[in-house]
Image (cartoon, rainbow, N blue to C red; front, side):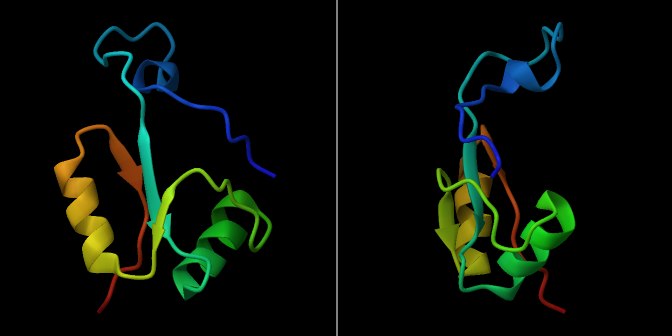
Length: 81
């Protein structure tokens, strides 16, 4: 299972002084989403294995709005075509 330890932006690139030590807010597809199933399988390596300390939603539009409003946000959501 992926680590649920809090992360800060400066921890992404050790030694980098360009990012402040602010907490990262996580956003992503909810567990009922096909995007969640694909993401966990393709990126994490095990379908359904994911950290639980993130804002989850099946509504891509809401996730996009949340990410756009959060300078420290990091997330994933599906792409509708």
